Every structure is written in C-alpha cells, then in structure tokens.
Image (cartoon, rainbow, N blue to C red):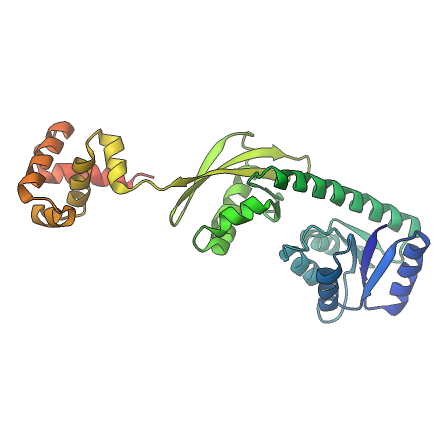
Length: 297
C-alpha cells in the first residue's frame, strides 16, 4: 500500500490526518518541521508528501523547494495543506513545486481522493521514465516556468562531461530550452547550443497540455577549429587553411613557419595559392576575409 509523509508542526493536525490515513490502510510517517521531513524522505522515499505551508524555522515553501532540488526526491509529489485560502499563497506553493493543495480543516474524502490521484500520476510518470531510461535515450523535461522536472541517467551522464556543467545547465541550457518551449516552436526542430568545449544539438520531442516539454540531446558536436572553418568556407587545403589562420592572427611568415614547422618559402607558396583562390592580391585582404569568417557564429 502507499506510504505518506505528513509534515506539520501541530500534533493535533498530525493525529487527525494519521487517523484518516490509517482507516484507508495507508502507512503514515510524520515530521514536525521541514529539515526533519527532508531527512525522513531521503531515508524512506514516501509515495507522497503532505506538507503544511506555515511552520516555524523552515516553512513548507522552502521545504518543498529543497525537496525538488534533491535529485533523489524531486519525483515525489507534494500536496500543500494550508488554512491560507488567498491565491497568493496557493500560487506560492504551486510555484515551489507542489502539485496540489488542500485547505484546513481537511476533508477526509477529498484528501484520500487527491492522494490516490497524485500517487497514480506519479507512478505513471515513473514507469514512463524507467522505460525511457532502459532504452538509453538522452531526454529531459522542463516545466513552463523553466524547472527541470526529470532527466534520464544518460542525460545526467552527458551533462556531467560538459565543463562547469552545473553553471552551464542553469545559466545556458534551461533558459535556452524554456525559451523554445514558450515560443511554441515546432516539435522535431533541431537547435545547437554551444558550451566551452563544443556544442550539443537539442530537439523538442513532446509538449503536454500543461506546458511541460520534453527535449532530446541527440548527440555531441565538436566545435569546429578555426583552421577547419576556413577550409570548409573557402575550399582550400589543410595546410593553406593553417597558414591563413595564423596570418589572420597577425603572425609574420617567419612566425608561421616556426609554428607549423615548415620553411618560410613554403609559407610564401601556400599564401600565393590562397591569394589566387580568394581572388585577392595581398596579405591584408586575405586576413580580413579570414577574420570575418572566423567571427561568424
């Protein structure tokens, strides 16, 4: 049967909810404050958490945020219990990561119905995620507000190999895909997002009615070197692209010869070929063309 973690600083409220759940054969865990709830959740992994919004020390909103920041716990649905009926606090709870709320005094039938519904939804989502995990897809899902809802292990492994991955995730990846989601971009379109050592390709694979979007990181793309970019854009040889690259960096023929470990005369011959292929007559014009290409995104 289900296991429910009830978090409330009121012993009377805990006792009442415990009686309601026990009559339904539901196992109950209790916590009197937020930090204690997090410790219990880490150890037991309840099916759902009923969380009082107003508590001393760490209130329910902060507790929920910390639960959702914990990768091992963020899949557990959180239902707020509150006597606060104004929309501001209801929205605050939902924005903190809660899936629903019930008002005090709690209606037993309503409470049980909401618990069963949200546990059922969570189990369906968990089954879908396990299926995705098993086929090795690099997938992740975000909410319309830009919160990372879940990601397959393959995605976590992929992201961990990116330099400064945590900062890149929060500062680059999440804002980038959130913008795509909120702009209602078509499903299947591919986008490139660069990072310090390369780039990844992202595609939107699903959009739910509630606005949640699932993305795939299809594969890793190495960032093209300056020499390769010049070769591809100007249709020149490997050595010619190397000579032109260093020319665009302000190097003299002698310096280029030392860098590439070739003779100065050989550098001159390559430059003559570059000038002919580009239709230019001097170093300055050739360097200008290269600089413009290298500056392009």
